[in-house]
Length: 439
Image 1 (cartoon, rainbow, N blue to C red):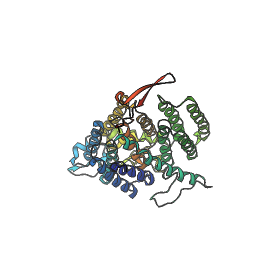
Image 2: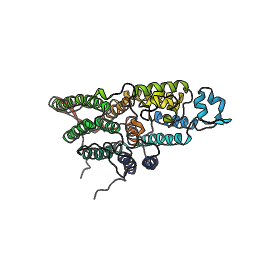
Image 3: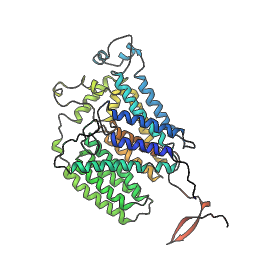
């Protein structure tokens, strides 16, 4: 009778937390009870992972970024002398915060606490992922793919209806696409999953199943109609094939077939983009201009995390007041800097530097190369949208960073002492030596 090893509780806990986020974390509004449930799940799962014995080493960069993030949030909540805060803040913003001898930086303490909890629990989840053993880390992929499949199924049912009206559900928000309240964010999930699907197909030798899943994903991306998502979907598929077929055993026929698929998808993508729908007077350029103006007058302290919409109105042009309500800058970088001030700039630059420098070590791992592409395109999409403000995508982003900054080797490699060299078709191969006890 074969004796089984200990149950991988850390992998199961983190996988279920990831799956929960993908199923109920598609809302974009503040104060959703679903986001609170996700945060509880992340904390509990992280506690299981951190208490598991013989875990992998935490990445020092990740720990440093987590500490910096918490300190940046607490700085906005700590009572400071009013003259110090007013030193780099215009009167219109200072008056909104009230007057007293001691004040906090944040224009809305509750919003900042909520934002800090949102970001800190996601980052705690990323650190917990880095504690897993290599086989447990790869074991999180099925949980992610199940969550993706549920979103694909929900989107298929919705897009098959005669009308594209929003659907009411048990969730505290209306579903626009998949299990998301925002179609662009659903599209983000689709193209973020593309490198992982190609990794499973090429590296884990599941090419047929993942090829069909990839085709289905790209077709739904077209049906969703996100302009930025359509363009990014083409680019990320091409780059994923190039990255992950490098040093793989997949022949040129499989790669050529995937490129034909990309070409057909790109043709459909071009027809889907309608530039006439872009409003030049009231759109992302206007949001960016107004946000940059606010950054210029609040560069030191910011206005407090989670307070973008409250402070944006102070700088909004009079002719824009009666247009649609602007709740985000549609540029995560500008929004973080507007809310966080100089500390927000430091956080962004520190992370981007660590992300780029890490690639030299991560390039030899196919799974980390896939995570690199997914993270890269989320960062690019964040230039024109706010995908990381959605719980499902924030946890997915944390999951990808946990993979990317993982310190130990992920793929199993044979040492020379464990293998023998065999010549096959003119190539030298390492074949495992079967070690058996003499009978």
